[in-house]
Amino acid sequence: KLTAINSSTGDIAWSVVLGSYDVMEAKGIKNLGAANLGGAITTASGLIFIGATNDQKFRAFETRTGKELWMTRLDASSNGVPLTYMGRDNRQYVVLTAGGPGHLTTIGISAADKSDTVVAYSLQK
Image 1 (cartoon, rainbow, N blue to C red):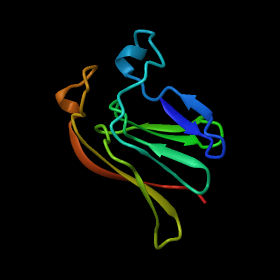
Image 2: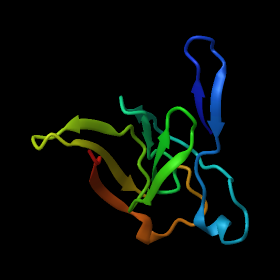
Image 3: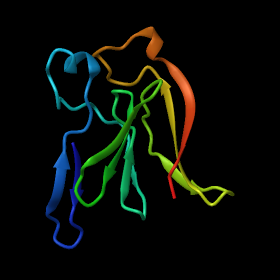
């Protein structure tokens, strides 16, 4: 799960199942969750980015509600924390690595799921 804690009270603000496997969803099993071997990054604009699930997906969530806003499939799992920076073009970028076959992956892994890439996404102004 991806869980947000209210820093003032210590209460859980929201919690969502994090991760899914295409193979299981095709069989009608949704919201299974996936092993997570990394962390998330939160932006000042209210976005959480995480790609650390071993389902090879990179996601963006709204910090206030936990609503998933965006998801894309990566060439491999990302077992690290994304980073963000401002480019010379005054656009904000989110970057992460995706590599290997993924740790603890037992569902749907194949030789084609191996990769060593660095991926960058720009955020719209």
